[in-house]
Image (cartoon, rainbow, N blue to C red; front, side, top):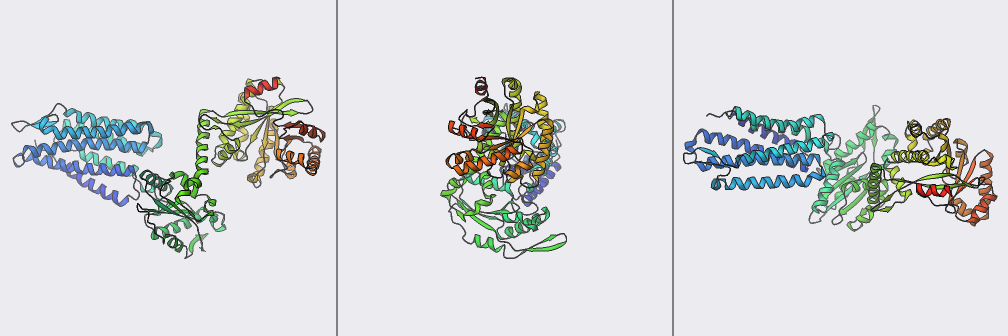
Length: 638
């Protein structure tokens, strides 16, 4: 039989072209592209061996049976190796933790097993051999080669299907084309054995994978040759895994964010692109653009010998002004960066915590952080990340708890309301400080989800416990200033109340004026409050007399209740002048038709004095700490 080898030659040429494209395009080394390059090399070798094999078959008199058998066996082993590497490649793309170890064990074990069987086959005849008549024979384990190869290929398909939502349609198509191409090729080879097309089809599939996944833009910053934050995190993770000592020179121009020149996105982009170009020219292959105004220069050295001239060379990049175009006019900027040097030799941080740290403006209060201070410096960020994980898990598992602190109505002489407070008691971390919990939730954009969770829990409790029948008029719920940024917040809260059948009068939303709502968002907050008041929801102003909440706030915001901070009470109990001022303030609040509540009441003496000066409501440990729902119900029943 005369085999047609033109397809093998085309596959060889195509693979060489693909390898050239890989080297011309690749700019950042990852496990993914290392595995992809391994597939290129294997396909190159199998294409070449196919050509040699066809040649030995065409001219058997020129080659010994041993050479012919060796070429065939090595080709079979490489074909299996390609399938195993493809499985590892898809595993690296999908990153499913529970499959990571089984996939690697299978790939390594099968590759080693086939290698041993192939190596011993000339003696054992388990895979293939030539009989006495020099006829090629297949051994009893020859089908095992195809079974293991296609098990790896279909295993890769299963991994990709399990994580298909991560990828685009073209990426899904490229992986499926590799798998389908191999299956169709084997069927075609059985029907038309003269046409050796398997390597040609595999080469085409590798081109699909290359264009779908091996994109340098994933790791480059905009249109520059500098690496981006994703590459930075990957490099820091890799150096930590290898225990590779490194030094970072961080340059930050955070003050640019408030500059009048940088108000437009195009201006900031122009500047960052110009700066990235200068830094790359000075430090090719070592510059990471972490955002528009933060850049890092990385040095790696096993010998821990660092170039002392890098800070000076980095500063030299700012000696010449930067020229950018703003509204068709050229503007020149002469800037000086803040600089921080971090040396990491033993205490290796994770990539994301280091990225979060260097992006913070206050990280540059000191010029250098030595290795022994890394852990201490990053500990607050590590704590925040731990808290964020706890928050996300609690939201997913709905394991937050809502505690209730009763409020004493002095006129009625009993509890008529309560404040709902968020609590988290983690099995590993224990009780989490609510103030820290809220601070982290606000910083990382989780407060909106938490606020809705608390609101739903309160509405559920009012309905299930028939709270209004127990003598409780309303429950106070804290509202974060960030929640008000949601334009549909009012609609969502009204929808929740209707779903649980809760009267709006049973809800009192508690706001605290902060620096965040001192500007344009104040009007948005007032519109929201007026809308909710039309529905029947009342509002309280928290921390009155301290911070931003003043008499001016009382006149602007449509609130019905004013809450005095506990610090004011405690100071007034020690200082008669402070007590006089607090009494006068309360008279003014009541004069404009508002009720007064004082927090932090802990002694009977405090209660007596507050009764004398005309308080309406009292809240504090004298009556009860915040308690879980069950205990709160027992408390009001008493």
